[in-house]
Image (cartoon, rainbow, N blue to C red; front, side):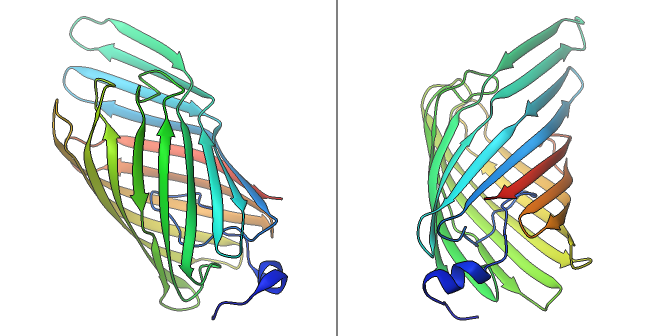
Length: 255
């Protein structure tokens, strides 16, 4: 589908939330609209021979604002995170309740802002250290995502999200190089239900410990109407350095 101009294109554009999943879609919010996308609950577990850590995020929220036919602004924030860590050797349990950092960014679509056919965008962002560890990073970070999607058919969509970050060091001071690639295949199961399977490879060159992380994810989205989506998903780690598992439930609403 070629680019259309003005309000005609905006009025015809289907709702395209960034949730759920690991990757980032190339579509943008139509001008004059706002997308509120929230993780109702997100639980991540990390488990090894000496330690188990459980992280629960409540209300992890992204607000996307359509600025032009091809550009949206983004503001994200996690209002509450709970981290419980148990030392298996000593039995000691540490708990922390924190707010997360603020994300500020924009996404500029370069071809097909509704995400149809072949669609590509650039998505730079910065994170502002509002929260504290272990939920907040402790310092500012920045990154760039270049999401690309391609419709293989009316029911299948191929997705690729390469990302390059100046990620915050584990000790909360300074930044280091991190980069990743996420491949996904989306499927229209019914007119209202979509499913996506994804794989991500991430290299994190943190000065304390450089790691290579591999993840596999599966997610589903249900469009209750043309402006409301409910989603459910999860991911599992495929390498020693990855989180063992993640499960989440969320909702997205267009206004």
